[in-house]
Image 1 (cartoon, rainbow over the protein chains, first blue to last red):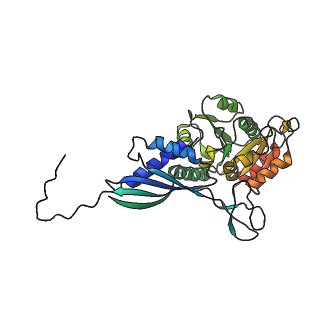
Image 2: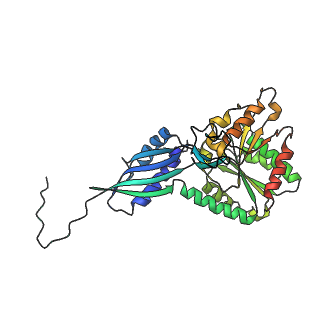
Image 3: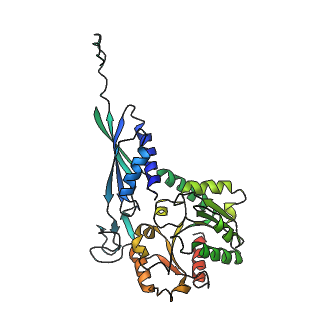
Length: 133
Length: 223
């Protein structure tokens, strides 16, 4: 169960990145997670709620984009996606393929921010009084 | 309200990875070979390491060990009997070691000079899932599997087995009573991590230790 550590690391990294946009609220965080990254999606979603609770990221959704394993086959010289993670063989020729080209990713791809509308340039006319209810 | 997408493209464990890269540099310049030992609880990591340290010590090699556990310093006390410097890391509930813990303990370990070592072994917390994501700055990640655990363990934990540089099968003195299917186990390891070096050992009888020690010596030699 290291998903809580992972969720906490995401919160730290996203908070840091979002601080460059004052007033913005983080709506969504998108991840790229390889099939070999040893991360359980349900646990991470559960821990995400815990880690964001009471923080400026509370309510932000976490989207996990899963990446399949891609191996490079020395015999064919081709990169191919393999189905599952139970056998590291080239799907074209059946040879064992040790050269991993994708599958260990554990990355924050992007964040979606909601920002207040930019302020209107000031004009000479006095602003109308706002009505407060 | 307007929406803005900001591309980050950054590793979630970037902090750990940066710390680990710093450690790796430090280990390389000190000329010490660092190994990270990972397995399930009960595989016999400590017994295997105990035997390894004893044999290295007897051959005049300079080794030390950092040993991770959730609680207790039992393993450190066991390993210290081999005559080499040992330090315990207690994670207090955390299921893996990370680079920060390793760095912190190395800094606090004033009597240990990395440059005076040939080998530093880091025994991770017993767990076949979480340690796979955390680089500790090691040069060699060793996954251990005992004959009592079932030959399909590599298939159940591909993330970790695929990240290993060497595999050690432990307790081979129990292979017969456990009806251990050697060919199946070796085949499964190779299916998940093609071409990996595999050592079949017994810490109890010493079987297979010569091959393992020869591998260590070969890896420690400056290239």
